[in-house]
Length: 478
Ligand code: HEC
Image (tube, rainbow, N blue to C red; front, side, top):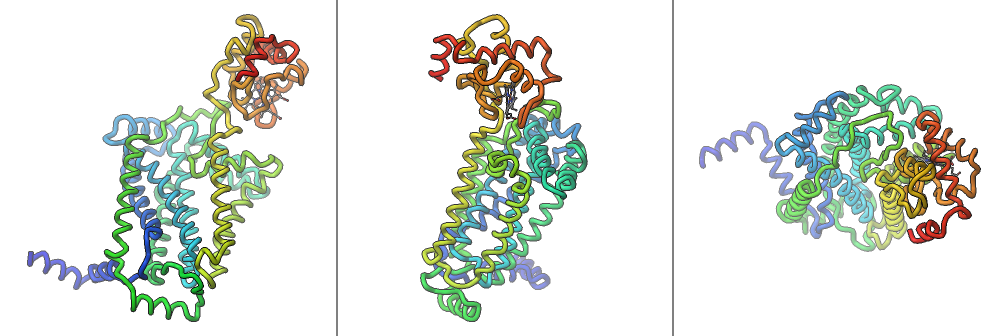
C-alpha cells in the first residue's frame, strides 16, 4: 500500500496531473444544480461510446467502393459482436444528436449562455454542426442503396444552388459522380477530420466550463450585468458552493450510466439499420431517406414548392445557423429566468414544433416511393386476363404503383390515378409515360411497345363511366 501511495505521490510531483484532477473534481459549483444539468455530460458519454465503437468498427471496415459492402456484411454477420457494435454506433450517434438538442434547449431556456458564457454557446453550436456532419458522412459508409442515394440527393440539391452549387456538389461527391472517391473522402472526413475538430471544440468547451464556472440556477428578478455578475457569482461560490464531486457529479454518473444501458439495449434488441441492397446507380426508384435526425430537413426540402428549393436549401440553414450562433450572445445580459423571457421560450417551442411536424411528415414521406405497395387485386382491376389485366400487373412491376395510387393502393408521390381515364386522353397518357415529368422518370427506354400499350389500356380503363359497380365499390371501400 505504502508503495502505491509513494508511486502516486512521485508521479504527481513530476506531472501535477493528480492534483489538477482533484482540483477539477472538487471545484466548487453553485448549489441547487439539479437533474436538468446532466445533459452536457451525457453528450460526452455518448461521444466516448462513438469513439470506442467507431474505432472497433474501423478495424473491420474497408473504405473501398468495391469492398465496403462485403466488409460490412462480414462485420454484421461474422465478426465477433459486430452487429452489436454497429447497433451501439448507430444508436450512440442518435443519442448524441438527441442529447445535444436537449442540452442546447436547456441552456437556452435557462439563459446559461449569458455573460460570461457566450463563447460556450458558440463552441456548442459549432459542435452541433460537426455532429450533424459526422452523422451525415457516417451514413454513406454503410454503402448500400439507401445510404448512397441519400448522398446523391444531397449533392443534387446542393448543385441547384446558384453560382456555388456545382462546386459544392463536386466537393461533396469528390468528383462528378458518386463513386470510389466519394467513399474515400467521406471515410477520411468521418474518422479523421471531423473527429479531430470535435475533440478540439470539446476541449475548448470544457476549459470554458471550468474557467467560467457552471451557471447557477436562474433566480426570478436577478439580472445578469457584466459589471456585477462575476462578483456575485464568486460570492455565491464562496458562501454556499458545493464540491462538483460528489454533490452534483453523482447525477451525471447515474444519468450517463442510464444512457449507456439504453444504447446497449437498443443495439441488442432493435439492432443497427439493416443493410440494404448494394448500391446500384441504374435503379430508378429509390428511397433516399437519411437517418432520422436529418429526416425533417429532407421533408422540408420535399414539401416546399420546387421553384423555391434552390435558395431554400442553402440560405435557410445558413440563416438558421447564423441566428442560433449570433443572437443569443448578443442578448448576453438581463433576466435569465424563463418566466421573464417569454419570447425565448416561445421561440424554443416553435422550433421544436416545427422540427417535430416536419419529422412526422418525413416518416410518412408522401414524396417518397412506397416500395411495399402490393399488386392491385382483381376487385380493383375488374378483369383477370387481357391487356387491362396485364397493364395492371405491369403498373405494379414497373414501379408505377410505388408513386401512384389506384383505388387506395400505392404511393402518393405522384398524382392518384384512380380515375385518370376521365382526365387524360390515350395520347396524353402515352406521352406522360414516355417522357416522365417533374419527379417522374421517363419510361421511353424502359418499356417495350406492347408493355406500354398494356399500361395505357389499364389506365384508360380507370374511368368512372367504364368501371363496373363492383370496381367502384372496391374503390370506395379502400
Ligand atoms: C418516382 C415516382 C413515379 C414513378 C415511378 C412513376 N410516376 Fe407517374 N408521375 C409521378 C409524378 C411526380 C407525376 C406528376 C408529374 C408532373 O406533374 O410533372 C406523375 C404523373 C403521371 C401521369 C399524369 C397524371 C396527371 O394527372 O397528369 C401519369 C398518367 C403517370 N404519371 C403514369 C405513370 C406510369 C404508367 C408509371 C409507370 C410506368 C409511372 N407514372 C411511374 C411520379 C412517378
